[in-house]
Length: 456
Image (cartoon, rainbow, N blue to C red; front, side):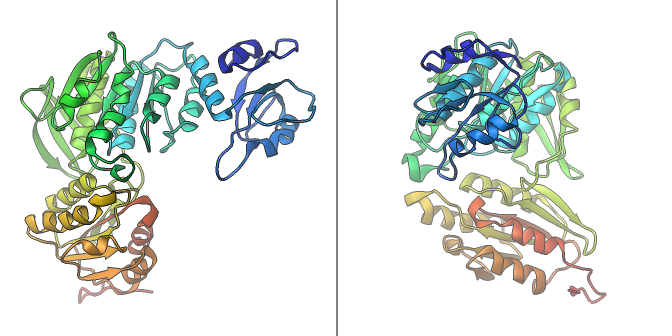
């Protein structure tokens, strides 16, 4: 990276700095990572205040700082702004605009991170691909990713999350995507936004930001696809199983630990055990083709994709010949139903589920949890259902209910009757920490010849 002080002053709208123009080799918000010739941005959050670390940043090599509070003379140029988080995004936009590469924005109610990871895989035939790390999909994570762009990158994939109206538009103003993909609209965040229509409009800020020359990639199977299409002037390309789609999924079938399907005549394989990842894979391949990747090359690259931890991660338990479907990262009605579909698609052994609360559903909360019980019954019922949390107690048919994941984990570690061939789904909202149950199951010892579990 090489950005000048004068360029940054102009980008952030700071008062002029009367100093010799200097150049920065990086932009940093963490003094543990700061190095010589860096610009330090003092971010402020409910948990911390970066202004506390300005002196440490300068000692580490920062040659200028961006702040929103008054500071005493500190010996380096100071750029005073109203909001350092906004300024951080403006600096990232300044840097992003130097690159003429496909920048793909990804959002949706569910499947954002998985689709982002798949996109990074299928775009790799173009060359090195930048992507947002983990779930750093907000007003600080997106700039952090973009500021890591180098001349070697041939594409960038930027995941965009939101908790309210206008936030996706803000991220688009920073990342300036030329391709926007929306996975699906469901009732996540309904407590904050009030309706699925409002959620669709907020997610739709991604495609609304695109120009006539850009591409909007939409899910033809999503009931909100038409609503989203009306928000954009970009070229619209649709994927899905509907006949009225540009890239059609057909012939889906389970193969080993993943799924195989055909997309406009190209055979696509994904190692994810989740059936709903067929849609995410189709979205990724569709985007790759629009960006100039040959369909077969994209499919070959996708075959190397491995699901991220806690996102329908398949944990094989050789000690008791079982499977754990670790989908503990988060939960919403659509994703839980899809996870249950995946569980019921396994023909081996018993089917067991630990289901935790689904949060942020507002007035929909009671009915959404009740509908999960109905969905389970539609499949013919589980061999055992265990619920975790006050909200999940509304899911009918539980063999036992726990108030929190620690109680459930203790039960899973010591008392759950396991048999060879059992397949166990673990899923709940992030705040429920359902990975405690996965860890407990993963540490179970072998089964004795009678089929009972030996716990040490």
